[in-house]
Image 1 (cartoon, rainbow, N blue to C red):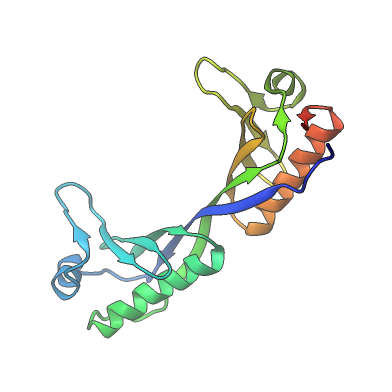
Image 2: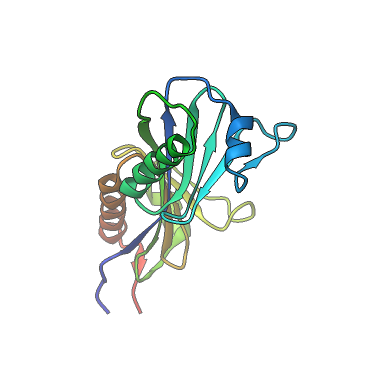
Amino acid sequence: MTQTKPIVSIENVVASASVDQKIDLNEITRKFPDTEYHPDQFPGLVFRLKTPKTATLIFRTGKMVCTGAKSEDLAIKAVRTVVQKLRKGGIKIKKDAVIVVQNIVASINLGGKIHLEQAARTLPRSMYEPEQFPGLIFRMLDPKTVILIFASGKLVCTGAKKEPDVYRSVHNLHSLLEEKGLMIYD
């Protein structure tokens, strides 16, 4: 059977943000009873959105971390929505949030099996210790990502800061596996 096009699914985009001012988290808790804030356990307040389905951690420094978005655009939209909701709820936020995507995690199916033992011997910057972890850890330099490779042909790509970098990493790795004869198609 011939190779299929890899199926890539963005699972999580983590974005950091800052509104560059101190925020009273107790005030947010009073005005937004759905938020979670337990300062004795963790210094951040959790502000969840249903759409896009995300959780944004808000710290008293004005820094935020948004997780759970399925794209860069949705991560940015989520942070902007949180800031907008806070303002509507009477929390004074002077500046718009400066948002930076920190990490994109994607799952990939290459549509064929992979010879992990051979891949470990062939791929540079790879680590494979099956008694510790069932996947091969491959560090790609350009784009700078880490890809977990499993014998099933499934991958997890992490470390990308832009969606095109995920696709480029997958394409580069897939080409390399093909070129070295490490893919097995039924």
